[in-house]
Amino acid sequence: MIHSFAPIAEPDARCLILGSIPGKASLQAGQYYAHPRNQFWPIMLSLFNGETDWDYRQRTQMLKAHGIALWDVLHSCRRRSSLDADIETASVVINDFADFFSQHPQIKVVFFNGGTAEQNFRRQVLPLLNHSPRLIRLPSTSPAHAAMRFSDKLQSWQQIRAFC
Image (cartoon, rainbow, N blue to C red):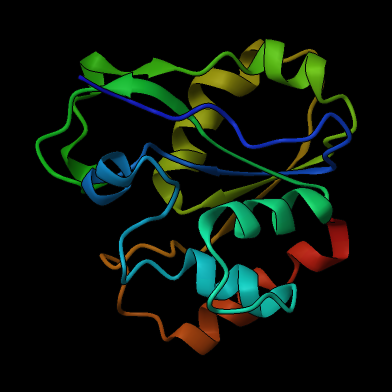
């Protein structure tokens, strides 16, 4: 079994970015999106004028300063590799979103970093919520989703700035 990290969020967060569950590189580093070819941090740094040499703490502070929370849909699961396609469906345990949203009532928009996060959220979380945040799927920043150019991903991800 692998387990996700605690959310990165301030109480006044306005937006939530959700992945599925950390990959092997992230689990080893204890940091969200730690794989060197994952484009999440380059995209965020570009959108919010961050410095490429910032350490993990500075990057997460940047997100919080812009009202962005970061988490994963899955609390735990079994997975043979870092690929979402290898998640064993029967092993999936979802994070406690009812509690999360009660502690972060200003979140009105949820962005998904790829399709697996969105599918699991819509199927297993949304029916349990007392409210319906706006849901927006963005292209995955994973190195496994290399068919899309960085510039095209960056353009899609820019809509975060309108909400956060």
